[in-house]
Length: 100
Image 1 (cartoon, one colour):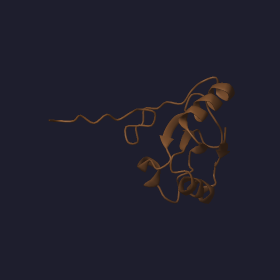
Image 2 (cartoon, one colour; image 1 turned 135 degrees about the vertical axis):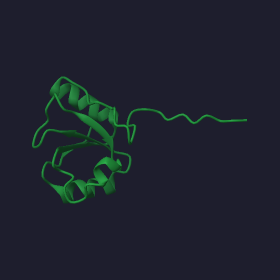
Image 3 (tube, one colour; image 1 turned 135 degrees about the horizontal axis):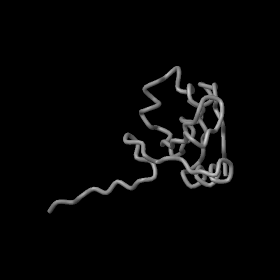
C-alpha cells in the first residue's frame, strides 16, 4: 500500500496527480488526518483542479486506489473516508442505460 501526504506541498501533490491518474486522494483537516473529516476523491477530480495554486489548503493523503485508502484510514483513524463526492463519484460505478 502506498501512502503519500502532501500537506502544504502544492507542487508535490500536482506531480502525484500527473503520475497517478487512477489514484485516490483524501482531503482532511489542514496538516493532519482528522477522523471527523475524511473525503475521498479521484486523482483528477475537478473540485481540486479548479483551485490550482492552493489545492493543499486541506491536507492531501494520496493512495494508489480507494481500497488502499480505506484500509489505511481504517487502521490509522478507525474510520473510512466518505465517497460522497458529487463530481468524481469515487467508489461508485456509473452505469449507462442502453436504449434500444
